[in-house]
Image (cartoon, rainbow, N blue to C red; front, side, top):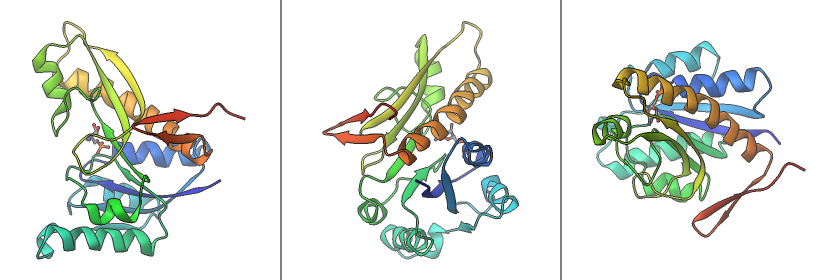
Length: 204
Ligand code: GRF
């Protein structure tokens, strides 16, 4: 089954690129229907356009309220027949206007092992805390920041000589691998939410 994705970004879009690449090599059965950024200068918008993917800048400042801003995002996603909303470095809280329109169909990527180090600076926070292991989480999004049932996690050891730069690059390497994989599990209809847990069905 080909799933239609709407990808929300704020910056470089390297995870968007990983999703595009997985699609291109046939590892991900998905159509990227739309990319939305809340920043005009996000390089991810350029990546999308280079691949002929509709790309939209939605400016929070152009709307009187956070609610109206989120309605605009919701409407754009609907207009492009998006089925799954994929946050990939979208650095804002997503409003209930979008979450309610796509119930249990909104995913987020977090650069730490939730519930540790939620928030906008998961990599720095883990490094500063001195944990020996951190990692990446893919989870369903809800109205709380970085909560919601967990689809996948992968750990990485923090080496003695890791810097923010080296740890960030290890985390990105994992992200680029696991986000497309999780999306493919969804395309194969192998993901089921049971309470606050996610069950992954074995391949048939
Ligand atoms: C990723 O590390 C993601 O976990 C975090 O923001 C970063 C986005 O990177 N939420 P990119 O824009 O996909 O390159």
